[in-house]
Amino acid sequence: MARRARTRADTRRRYDFQHDMPLIDGVCSRFCNGDSPTQIREYFDKELRRPLSREQPYQILSFAAQHGLLRYEPPTDYQLAKKLKQDPRLEEVEVVQTAEMEPVATRAAQLLVRLLQQMAVNDGAKEVHIGLAGGGTILHTVKAFGALLDGPIENLPNKLVFHAMVTGLQLHDPRTDPNTFFTFLPFGKRGNLTTKFVALHGPALPDKKLIEHLIENHPPTKTTFAEAKHINVVLTSGTSWDDDADSRLNAGDDGPHYHSRLKKLMQDAGGEGRKAVRELKEEKCVADMLWQPISIEKPLPNHPGIQAMTLLELEKLPELTQRGGKVLLVLGPCACGRARDDVLRTVLGWEGRHVTHLVADSRTANV
Image (cartoon, rainbow, N blue to C red; front, top):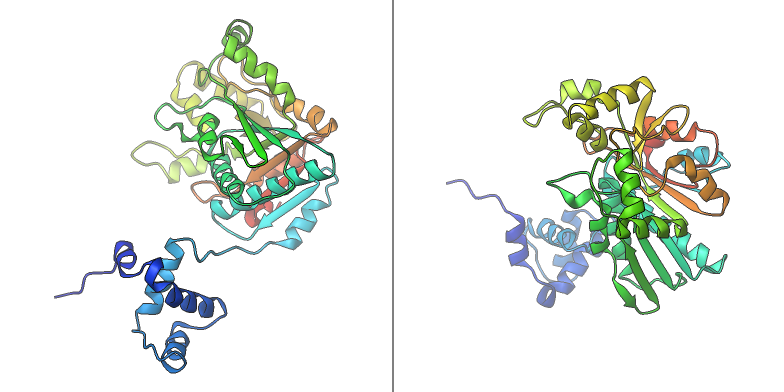
């Protein structure tokens, strides 16, 4: 009878922190110093007089990884970062040698912490307002940032105010709505840090007239837009609209694959939505950023018939940066694995300073 394959649950049952920490520490320390599982077994046998089975080093390493004791940190591509940093508009650039989203988000969260520390120490900022775009990339970045805030961090501003900059687009999956990102951040006062949140509620894809009506006549929306003038750091990402080849190759049970959630929902809306997509393509739309269409030449105006509800138009970003504000653009691989080099090439090709800080994976940064 074939032996059943080991599972994660088996590993969790086999070891625990209370009784096995010296064993776990010994295996992990020697592994991180470059010892092979065989060498680890030999060390325990000869030096500690504690024989290990052939499987135990692997089991212990698996247990340690599951509980966050072991972490792989992809290296930085300094050459690509230096090349991009030649653009005088960029104050800081991080390029991560990875094909995964999580390491990019983690590095972006670390950069955001450094940026806030610089604003507090160098500029004397006591209160900083951070605008959060929507989407999976920013979701992962905010989760990583929230985890960092749980630890001891010095020299932060006394107060951080987080603003949702867009409304959610998905009816059945609200995780990419920035209003939900607040749950990953500390609430209220914690030590020397106080946090506050400003939500943005409204329809997913309204027309321009409805947005104007809400700003004028709906008190919560009016207040949210009024408080947006205080935002001095924007955290955003971007997604390609070049879906044609991938749509044919990756069509599944749910239909063609779309890189851009904005484009997909506009298509799914039919009628006015599909008309808007056609017209935006005629205007050479190649991607979206802050859930707004962009072309090689410049950010495009939102389509008046159907658009995402956003606090800040992209064409206003140079005014923000001119006043000393910061825009952190985070570009990790798409969920399908595709690089976003076309998005980066587009944004850096514009006149004016729309971005001040950049974190990207190495394939995306190779523009």
